[in-house]
Length: 153
Image 1 (tube, rainbow, N blue to C red):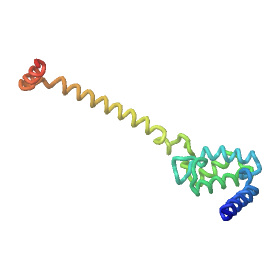
Image 2 (image 1 turned 180 degrees about the vertical axis):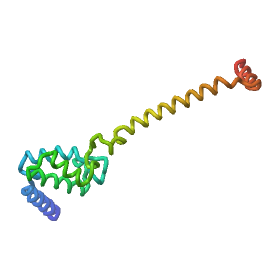
Image 3 (image 1 turned 60 degrees about the horizontal axis):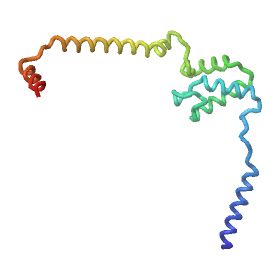
Image 4 (image 1 turned 135 degrees about the horizontal axis):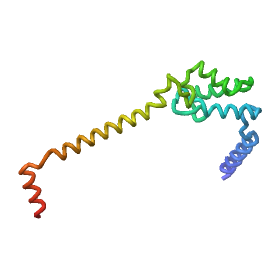
């Protein structure tokens, strides 16, 4: 019994000692403007590892490194556009979560619409073929006899 009480006392003491050092999470920078800029840019830039996530959404080590790099550039006083231009020059337009419309990215922007039009046209042709096949093929005598039998039942 005394052993159990001693264990409970030690556990409570350790929890209390650990809670004394606990602090509320602090932002990475004391400068709120820099952190706001980093957060804004983190939602506009793509994780190079995950490819379908922004830097803000990704937990990859490379994404965290890029966020730190953006934070350092923001601390130096670089504007959003200067930071984006630097990263685009280093990694290409792929680093942007929404790449600009230009000759090298036109397929990204117009490709889905082109596929939709081609698919719709193919569906239209297939339905017309099926309709033509159904209208041109009259029933044989055997098929007519089976239909009559079924209808008479």
